[in-house]
Length: 522
Image (cartoon, rainbow, N blue to C red; front, side, top):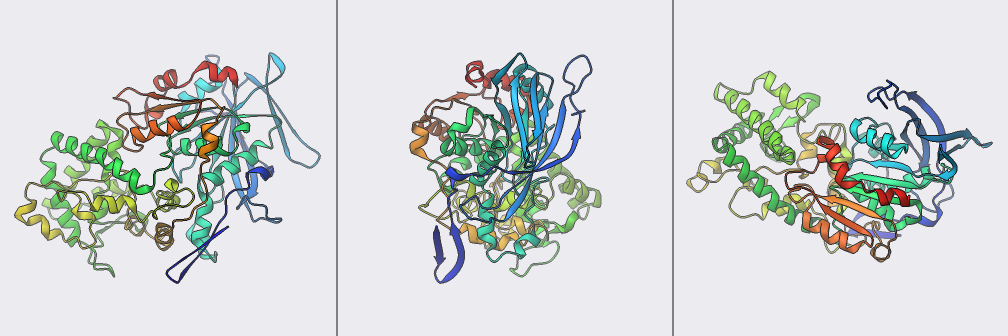
């Protein structure tokens, strides 16, 4: 246990590493419903994959406490007629599932676990039908989709839940990737004799490598796409590297749409004058749906769409063009505001997933850090030269954009980066998280996410597809991590492929990512 105080201000932080040797089986609550997986057909005969929604109870904190506080998790198990799934309730009412080869009944097979990105995203079972088909039809293995703690239909993290806590900051630390791995292991223990075969996208790769670090005996193999975590790198290291790609993407955007440079400035200046000022004398911008607000700084986070390549550039250009035209005619039209709300609102849909904003930088924090997160994405942006990110500064005044020194200096957008104002812009659903996110930003002590020594001795086969032009995960850091993990093969993707290619071109990605010998080992 680590207790931390900050210059006399008690942060009430008790950092406790997971008790990995004593993970208890989850309590099976029951099926909350079932479906036939009607969004994807299993074969040309018109039959559908089957899906069962399963609900479990696990401890909020996976420690050695005798009576831990419970939370609930929801998972969906999707399967076809390929494997035989033996399902029955034990005398004590707990779930008992075994996956066996239908042609070789005594041969226990692994269960695939799909780990989605985030942090803070739900994990719907049928979000990627093509990927499901490949796993269910070609591998003939079932897939488990878990809504991570705090997301989807699992126990949610809400402003009301924070208000009930003596230490909301400590509570939020219990929703990182180490706790998610402990949840998965607790669920795995409900399945008789099964091992997990992990498929992780983006943040899902973070979860997978944590699993390999502490519970390698529970896994038969790991496939990762766009998600090797930068082990040993703190938030400042990460964002210093990622800003290189952000700057490159902005240059490409303005090269494609040169007239947008002046339009963006005009939009920022207009937003700075709209809606009056808040208590910190910053512009409140204009009102969006769900009591969100579009501030001038919030507008400049639209670069989050750049990670989608040409489609992302086109989408930002459309919004810039539409907003600039409205402003020229007197102000933003109601339908433009509605469209902006539908396109993500104040940013990252934090009113529906506040954990994404609160825990984004803490996913890079493991053990004792050299420095706290300190809103690193924002701080590194302020240090960039040339004035392109001048809008990130605390004392930003839009009138500076009229000065001759800024005449030929376009404002640059940031991408998947969380800044301290975003939670406030997002409205009452996420605004209460801001104070506690500030607490997390000052912390240097965290639970341990990786065991470097164990990774250097790893025997679980790991194959990771890494993207040379990834704006979300640094390519060089990915290669460095791969070199740290024994039996990890990093496979560079085509340069035209993007971070989310597993969603946009799943067949091509699967042909490169999935290797049969890892499946045979499983």
